[in-house]
Length: 65
Image (cartoon, rainbow, N blue to C red):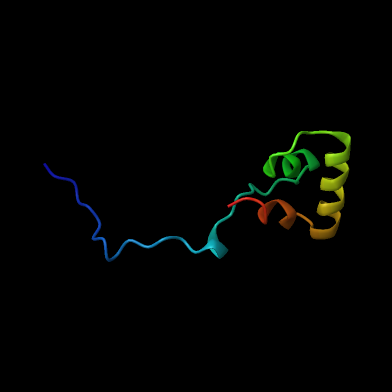
């Protein structure tokens, strides 16, 4: 029994605008710090807090693929 394979011509990538990384929960400063690969330090947490204040939850969405 064979399995059906999609034709190469019909396979499409999902557009970036339709991809979502968050689950709808609040974005924590720790999440933003870790998303950029930094250590969780008081200075980095303060930077992340400012970024969240300025950009809202999109601060994390902009960092993740």
